[in-house]
Amino acid sequence: HGELASRAVVGFGDAGARSGYVREHFAARTRRLGAALLLEPACLELLRSPSSSEALRVASFGGGPGEVALALAVCRAVLCPGSREGRHLEISLLDWEPGWQDCAEHVTAELRRSGLLQHADEVLFDGADVTKAIHE
Image 1: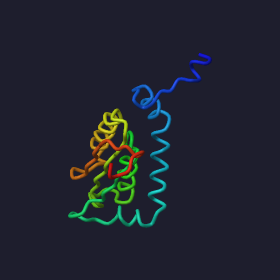
Image 2: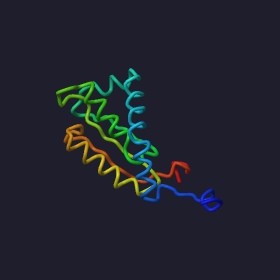
Image 3: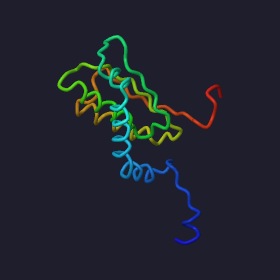
Image 4: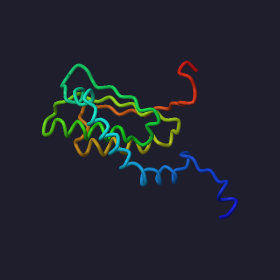
């Protein structure tokens, strides 16, 4: 405690920190992302428009545990209830912390088990350092 605790820095490289983040922030971030999607008319149109040849491609920089995947899958289910209509999703979760990949894969598996992700949907995780220019 004391001075040592005030100087301690724990990043998301620590599994406990990732777990704490998910517990404290995942649901709220997912709700905010979903609300933002549902309030934007262009997003509504894209999610509702069925297209077997063209997927809705989304890149989430700092995508961490996959909140955007859950938000998009739920919004599509709300907008196209009881059907397999709506655009297929291709979601790229990009984050500099490779430890988030395990969480993102578990979120994806749960979305598939619950039927919120369709067979053709993809959720991918890859590394991205947003502190560097794209060409580096």
